[in-house]
Image 1: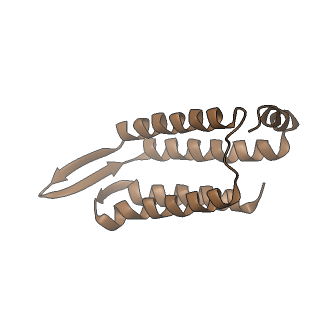
Image 2: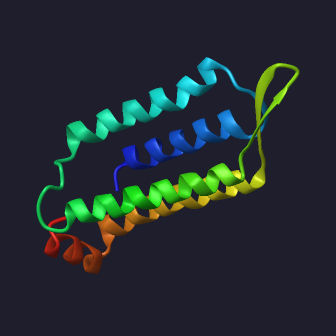
Length: 129
């Protein structure tokens, strides 16, 4: 597995935890930072990874996108947003940190397995993923 996979995943984890943990005032720069980071990562991957348009690749990517939506909704349930003295605030604690650590750990684990597990490589190849 290349170091870029580790770097990208750890940057995402760091940006999310820095932006969301604790009691934080919601500002435009705070909202823009994760969008900019995600946009840069999407561009990085799209320029280096072919689209999965045949076999089971597209279905696999759509299933993972659906899982991402479910995990995002779960994060929303443990992420509190409120108004105090006219300002908007958010508050998140260890539950959100744990969720993000598990998700990023799973992403790194899958990337590691895809690079080292012969069984997973055969399955991915068989399904054109």
